[in-house]
Length: 118
Image (cartoon, rainbow, N blue to C red; front, side):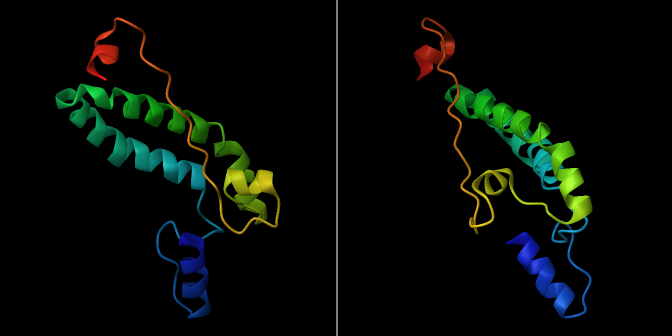
């Protein structure tokens, strides 16, 4: 939807808003930045007062690692104008929307504080 907005802005002769220009936005880098600047600091603080959020924090770290693996590929795709969300690339051109896979976090080890809290 971000790129669709940028496309519409361009059609209207307006400069595309930040992160909305498919020709200048590396999706993976944006996702990593969002995690680093907004999501991880929030969940880190919440986790201090709500220890069961450790599952969410682990999943967040896993998600970030997934995006980090996509940075170079998405940079190359952006440069040639073929950038899509990774799941769309795997599904092929018939997929209009990405179906983000939810990666479950590892279960806490038995006897750990995390296991007892859940």
